Length: 148
Image 1 (cartoon, rainbow, N blue to C red):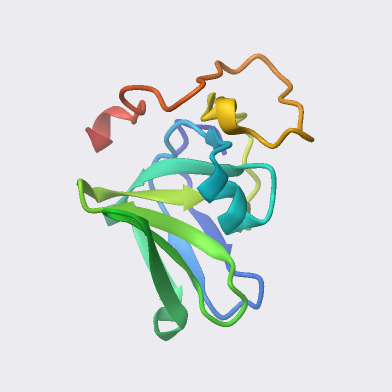
Image 2: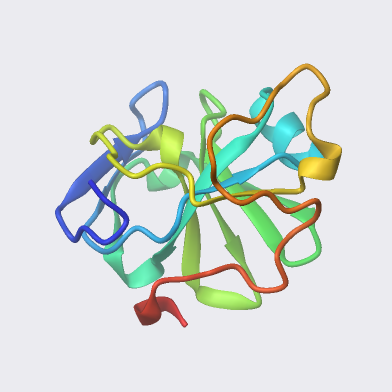
């Protein structure tokens, strides 16, 4: 699926208790290297894509969802059984979810569009590829036209 694709995609958590479908356009894939994202994922980074909330449909597992407010107005949503991160939501942009690309079961052909918070990246990880890198976050995260 490319960043501009509108094909149906599906995703789930590790235990399979939470399943979702997504029928809209993936925004640009952002790779965040900040310490909060590294801790939340137990990895060197987190890959997300902004998506329209209206295009996201939970198929099963609503009762398994939990969320954590990791910073003011930013809520990380995950399965409370297996702890798989699924998406985040922000009170400042209620119509947009930041979908965790790793939770998709459907293959994604897109490549990262940008790396953010590279000044705080894990010292043991090297960033490869030609996607732009931002020491902090860009002043405005690029979103598909329908999400603005």
